[in-house]
Image (cartoon, rainbow, N blue to C red; front, side, top):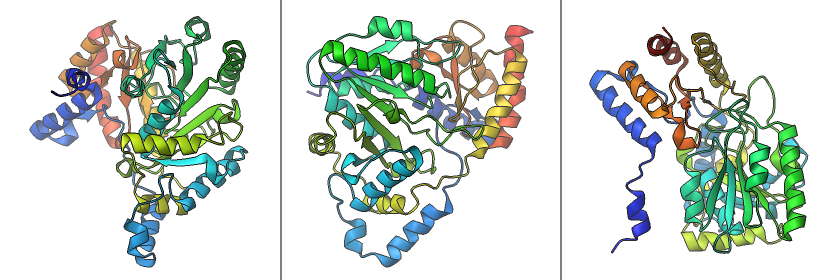
Length: 396
């Protein structure tokens, strides 16, 4: 008999993937250019040239055993040192190689961090709506319970009144995502300072550690020439989970890391614990070639400017049409309010115009919808008449 938990999960499809699959079917019928698929957050710009150049040079100059063999369970030293040095240079931190664990993208990084902090039945992880819809299976698969703090829908900063009500001694970790999927909002330094202050207070009250697990795959996708505040600089007990998927446009390479704040209470042991978690879940190291390539171009990014351009086009037009939307500060997502309370019905109506949008309920924030605008700019521009026709149904 198959594990009933996973059998039950098959009846709850990932709505993003489901809409994306429909988009492919529809494109086969009427042509890709006629389907305005804003469902999947798949980067749409080329990788930085340095990444492909690094791979080619590595294949030419390094021996096959090194390139294609197993890496150490904690990751290749060259990659771990490069990550530590980059974080120190950019954010004024004090990481060393021993604080870095190479992971299979941000999802693998978060999976390790959750398992490291969840130890007892009834342990909880708090996250803040709107939140990435896969957090629930991530947390439950690690043996915890996900508690969702309702959104402040006017700002999408943290709703601290609700957070304080839900915070209790059973909470072992706070899972945050900034810049945020799905809202595109960047948590302010003031928000992070307030969160850190509450958690320091609660650690003293409960007599145990409470960790921030900071999911940061969009860290480099910030608009207006700004920089996203570095979460670990505000709070010692922070595990930073990162992916190069978005910044370098390499989602298929599945490469990322966990960085353990050197000031963390468990900094001496955490990375070794991640290695033991890998043994249990069969993670067993990311590809050696990709780790070596990342080490050579650690601070390079794809040309991310197209996402800001797409944001400007969509945000200006949708707000002109009467949509309410908190303006994204980064990522390639925005999260407007739907023009009727039933966000699923709204997104279904949008399909009449071959606009594929994702309902907000799956992100813990009904009455909204997500637009993943990581598509060619010309397609964004061609989608605007469809948005106008959709809005006209509601607003005249």
